Structure formats: C-alpha cells, structure tokens
Image (cartoon, rainbow, N blue to C red):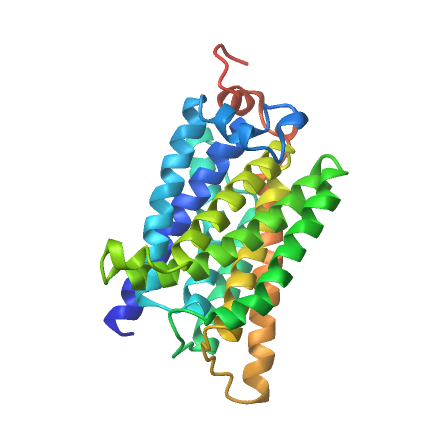
Length: 304
C-alpha cells in the first residue's frame, strides 16, 4: 500500500465516522419538526436553532473536510465505498452512549458489510482518472442527474413515513454523489489559489449540489425513519459518485477476468445487504428499546 493510498484510506474512514455521528444527531432533531417544513429552506433555519442539530452539522462539516482531503489522494471509486462504514461507526457510538449491546443481527450485518467492502477494494484496484470533466460531458449528465432528483422529490412529496424518507434520501444521495465529484475538482483548483479557483464554474456547482443535498437530507430525516434515510443515503451516494468517476472522470478499475467480475458483483451485493441490515438496526423503533435507553435518546430526565 502506497503512502497516498494509506492517507486516502485513513481520511475516508475519519470522514465516515463524522458522517455517521452527524446523521444520528441531525435526524434526532429533524424528525421533531412538522411535515409542512419539509423540502423548504426554512427547515434548515429552524433546525439551526437546535443545539444538537448545530453540533451534528459541525461534525458534518468536519466530515466534508476529511472527505475532500481523501479525494485529494485517492479516486472516487476508492474513497466513496469507504464512507459506507459510517453505519458501523453509528452503531458503535449508539452502543457506547446508550449501553445497548449489539445484537447478533447487527454483528452479522457488520461482518457482511466489512467483508464486501474489503473484497471490493481489493478487487477493483482503481487507477488513473481526471480531476474534472469537460462541460460537454456535464451537459449530457446534468439533465439526467437533475431529472432523477426531481422524480424522487416529486414521488416523495406525495408520501409519508419510510417511503418518503427513502425517496428523499435517494435524492439527497444523488446530490451528495455529484457534490463528491465537484469536491475532487474543488480540491485540485484550490491548489492554484482562491482567486483563480473562483474563475471556474465547478466551485459554484459544488455549492448548489451541497445545499440541495443538505435540504433533501434534512427533509428525509424529518420524515422520521432513520433506517430508510440512511439506507438510501449510504447506497445512492457512493454509487452515483463511482459511476460519474468511471464515466466522466475516466477512472479505470481492474477486474482481471470473469471470476474477478463475479467477485466484484458479490462484493457490491454484500455491501448493499450489509448497509440495509445495519440501517434497520440504526432505525430500530424506540418501542423496541429498554425504557432507560428511550429516556436517554429522548433527552428526558428521571428514571424508567
């Protein structure tokens, strides 16, 4: 393992830790707001008055900084799957804070996710790639991305509960996946200085994609199903970023024959089922938890 790969690995895991913690903190506050606030910028302004959400947002910003640094050393195809480990960190933090031990289901799902991730990173061996895509490529990809987000938002706005959280989570994941691509370009442009960087359009696109993703993610959290929200976010973001990395940034992956392709497919399936399994654990209803844990999570005083 080269120094650049090691640096990218460590920074991506730090980003995953921050994202896992921020998701739990932000969702806890967002679900307490009424449905009428969803998909509106005012949702974020109302959440900004809640200290726990502000803390979660601060951790989220720290996660973005680690993410950007990881992309400076590694490719999108390598870095993005590592962010899925945010679910593992969320489980560990929850167990540490609440005292609730991990169930056998949690443990098995974590093993499946870790094995799938390890197999994917060993089998893909991403290399090459550009730091930005030509505007002509975005003219084609842009409408597809915007259309997919608009479709998820339109369908999600008509639903409630987990279906709404899932659809808006997918939309947010698409936005953050695109933002990851622009983040890689942003880090490269920043090396030339702030003023020259502002002469390019990608930093502004990064801002739009990030703000859109923020509003969509909080709207997904506000629907009240952390399970559906995290599953959608953790699956759609790395998939979108990796597809764009391969299709637009010309990142190459080494599959080395038929059986390597089978192994890669198995790794992706393992990661998917691991994420879904762990997200169900993160979203376990409070009614299934001991009364003492419910008291801690809800922030009330007293004893059970």
